[in-house]
Length: 112
Length: 115
Image (cartoon, chains in turn brown, cyan):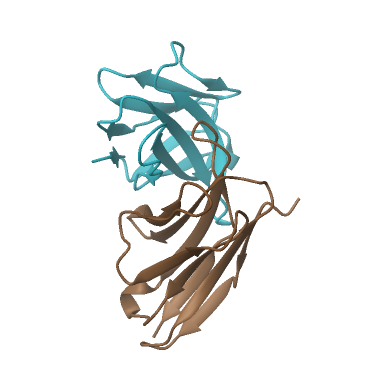
């Protein structure tokens, strides 16, 4: 039971570098989400995809882009990393609006 | 706009006692779901309990119950008979059942259970 798989688990970037965080779920869920978690700020929604083929901005989308490649995969791209993007990133998916979200194990990203 | 507020950054409770973690929300959506998650120090997110906005009864799952007061827009989590393993961060979350489907979280409450 893989559930939601995120890669990589850890990453260090230099300011200005780009990278893509990968997320895949094998539960045939419609909705997928990207969050960042910072101390004292809880989980903040970056982008979400209610269904395959759609993406929408969340609470803190600036500096990020996403791609819903297919029903399974939802990637998050940082085009030009900044120290303010140092955070733990979580991908999540859910089957329907009334069911819980399943989370990946998180990616700890440090931008120096 | 949607908003979740958790006003207790940290809480202490004695083992075997009950504790209430507060959550208030704001939304203009007529129909929504409310969720609670636990995040232990290991970092994974664990789903605890769900309450639909039109559910007549408060949700319960084992030692967890959700005290839902729709008019006050509150969805407090009650943990009965606290255990040392309950020490963790607890997050309240909300998602409308139509429209935007934004799934947002509060800032969390760190619970420490004392032996």
